Length: 169
Image (cartoon, rainbow, N blue to C red):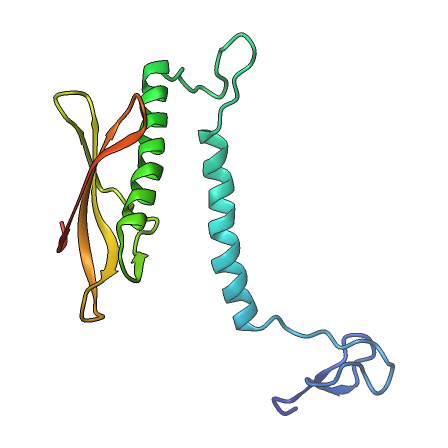
């Protein structure tokens, strides 16, 4: 038999590997799964499966008695408030940075590169956020990387100071 001809699984007659059904008995031809199909299945299914498995251990639900399940520890309310303040400050700073851009601009942040890569606090308790994932068009039309520093008052969520300069951190 040549490479393009195989045997029918039902009647044993010769059948082309490209045929949809056997010319002798009419049984549907069984085709092998292509290498590309296996490649896609493995490289799509495995990451999804691993996310599902790893997600099971990280989730926790809190019942009315405030006892977390799945072995998780309780989160300190002060830490929760600080995290919420930081997230609100990031939104306010992002909006202020975009409003400050005179010409075309774009963010270059992503999963591995957040908008604000450095943070701190002033002596007065204001939140300092700094990053370099913003590009703005200069007077010559070229896009330049910008380093930005944003200071936010956590009690009012107002941007106190915003500073830009060309470069990278």
